[in-house]
Length: 144
Image 1 (cartoon, rainbow, N blue to C red):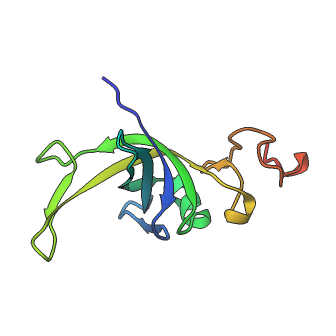
Image 2: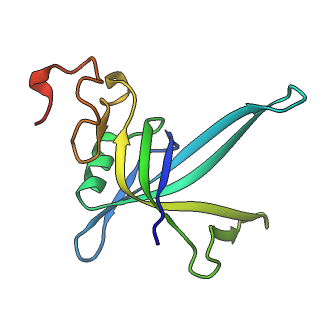
């Protein structure tokens, strides 16, 4: 059995990095994904879904260094389910309203957008997503 989750969205805040007692880095950040559509009656709708993303190891350190609030990313990984419910993490907020959180563990994080938005089109392991897709890079600047 296999599952793969791919999301593209914008960071809702700056990433937060910490280290486990064994010394492994983990970075957490939230990503907002949105979709817009028009129904049969011509009414426009927009839906935003938030994901809490965890990244581990060297990628965690790179994400913490280069990502910031508002930055667009593509995250590939797996859905992390609540062990009790088998679905999203569910809790009750301080106002008594039920809430749910979609969480994923990312294996790959690609930084999207232009260099002016904090970097080129690179993955968190430093490899270009596609050579030549960032007009701000020269061949001498490509890291391979």
